[in-house]
Length: 124
Image (cartoon, rainbow, N blue to C red; front, side):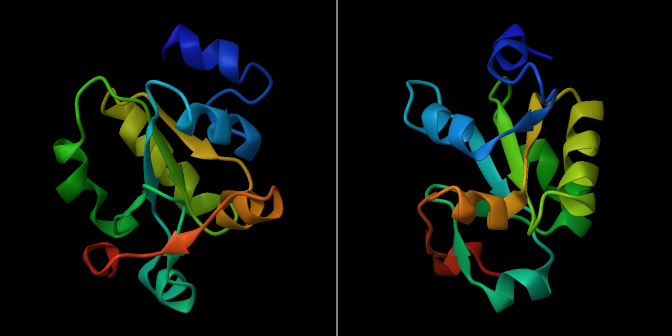
């Protein structure tokens, strides 16, 4: 785990609160944001956090090896519960500096976070 993340999120170890993620995305070294909502949840609302990519959480073993080495990652699902926790934990076991977005996509929107339509390549 990086010391930067411990300083940024001391009260929520391995969780990024939406406002802190907004600041990090505007900074010089933004994390890679991965939407890990299940395919049906993504189809129900085909929008993402700007710059995020959708990846099927059930295929994490297939795509996790493609992540850029050394880059921080933040994953999110609908509410920031089981799906994103499982993805974060699996990535951390592989040595990835991974956090989950507290509150998930719904928490992001409630905090005033911007959303964009998903691009065709990011759709299940």
